[in-house]
Length: 106
Image (cartoon, rainbow, N blue to C red):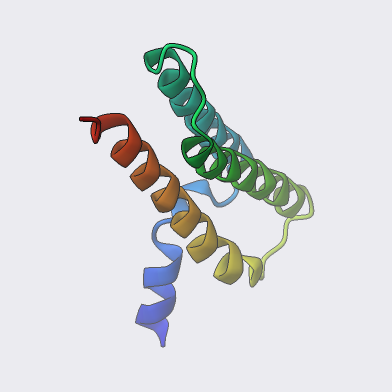
């Protein structure tokens, strides 16, 4: 059971107790959205936009959650069992969508 928890916590560990890192990750996804719009001559594809915006808002929400946990000095972080895998799945999906739409052109 301990190794399963380590596997679940490993991807999110650099962001625990660091809300600024989570907010930076959110803005990375906004940067990807801006890059996609610029290279598509200002055209916005909704199937590319919504995953990137979802990732942006997920990271911002996680940053707010981390700030609250940090300011309250929370020791038991059960919320990471929910946020960790969810935010990683959303981020991977957004990156997959970006790569597929941006680099998978004809």
